[in-house]
Image (cartoon, rainbow, N blue to C red; front, top):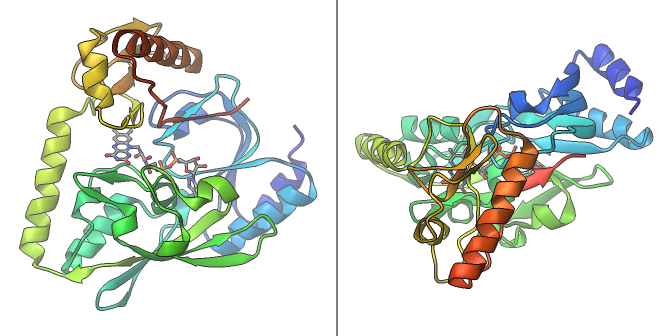
Length: 301
Ligand SMILES: Cc1cc2nc3c(=O)[nH]c(=O)nc-3n(C[C@H](O)[C@H](O)[C@H](O)COP(=O)(O)OP(=O)(O)OC[C@H]3O[C@@H](n4cnc5c(N)ncnc54)[C@H](O)[C@@H]3O)c2cc1C
């Protein structure tokens, strides 16, 4: 697909970009063919200009944060991939309120909260995400999720108008938000926290990180939990009970350490992962009668 208009815009506004950029370099699975162009805006203004030019020229756009919940096709992604990671400002708005740009990582917001003696975000320490991707997924762990700490967020709608939504207008549920449905692009998120004890916040954050390291196969590329939690069950336990730990297709494998994770054991393709996922789903359905739905989002050509 022709992306000359975006190249010209990037040269003019000094936006970082790369042509035929392998998505394997931008996803935690380390899987995925090339996007026609990858762009790295540093501000909401640059992001808006990219979206405007893409719209005028009929170039499809995909927005990514850290790429920790996506599985990109081996054929890559048509058009532009906009990676928000350079939109990373974090500011203290008042005693208990933090504003973070969409590309700031959750880890850096957690550390910023801790440094300002603010409690509430400890659960999120260790979830590999940008703030935008975390809100889109309503990411959560250890009893917390984004719905418990987000006050409001700004986004751009399809007409490139700026929208400000309060928490109750985001339809936040288990790994879902309004942004999945309306295609708005989150540009910044406001967090409402409470004053706490810095030492305790720090200790709790480290304890949560240690739990993760102990139970999750962080030494392998993956996209975290492959499946959503089916009501009344745990996906990992079901997969384990079906004897699927260690089961593999090509370079994709069910983690021996945590059956809820499909890992890239070396050279896995998107097709390997998709085939493995289908195998897991059909075995679990056959042996336990439970339908598994994927949490990982498959995108691309
Ligand atoms: C080792 C590991 C552990 C994990 N543990 C957890 C966990 O404990 N809990 C949990 O919930 N998840 C977990 N995950 C999954 C992942 O961290 C979350 O889903 C996270 O929210 C993804 O954020 P991201 O910035 O990487 O989003 P991406 O993967 O880049 O994108 C995910 C989706 O969000 C959309 N998106 C991204 N940015 C924006 C934006 N600014 N505006 C609108 N849409 C946007 C993308 O288009 C895509 O559809 C884990 C993943 C890994 C690899």
